[in-house]
Figure (cartoon, each protein chain N blue to C red):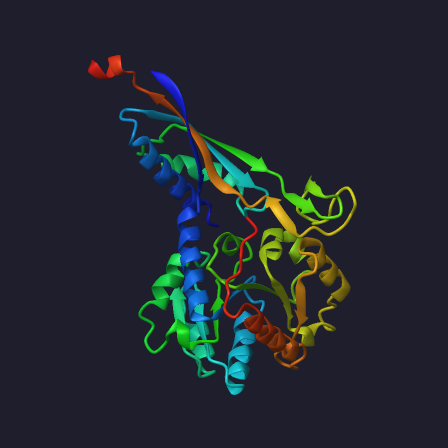
Length: 232
Length: 123
């Protein structure tokens, strides 16, 4: 017997990273800005997206959404009320979306061509841990955090907050009854991702939503559909 | 938790690799995992036995090398190691750091195998 060391130096998620890179190229070629929305369960991703899809459509933008969920299609049905094409991805117990699932659902999506879209939103499975490891080829990763959650969420889930491009604080209409510590939250986000754009919003009162739409428009124009680039 | 799927992916890759060394036994698999990789090392180890059962990796040891976060600090003009993942500021000058140089790795570094010698193969 001879003992041998075999060097591999291979990324464990290499397959996902390669598929994501191919998706990013497709998005760029199609000129569509893709946003990956991540949060813990119950942070308000679906309500936030419902509002966003409805409002963008009113303003003439061409939008669509892919919605990840463990089992139900409840979120897809809610989002479809906006009039935008919505496709459900059931992960059947898997706690995150991956690039392969996105690719499969983009292919054969009747009536939807990437080239005919301005924005594609991907609502990830509610989970602040695992989705952070899976690149979906998105242009912008948006992390949502509601005022009913702790101010220390960014410190508890640093990978997700550090890998995001923008943060959205939701349910601001509940800030006072919940005793939401705004300054602590902003400070914590800024410790984990210094300088990240933060939107303080409520779909009930409408606060902060115009700023959010302005950001989308700005980013779409600036990138002209170009993909986001990973630091490593 | 996605540790089991990560471990399964490691088992697949290593199985493919050792196919090139007939009769070899895998003794050790070494991973490099960044502090920001969103992976719980204990869970990886917990899944290892289950995922390797009945494969060429059965009985092998999993060694996880956790890498600290390294950022590039612009004012200091050099790479700095963060003490934890609770603050992305340069530990020397206190300025915010945006340029991540290490910490998201999730890779198989190397494997150690016991290979059959030619003489043994003939027997």
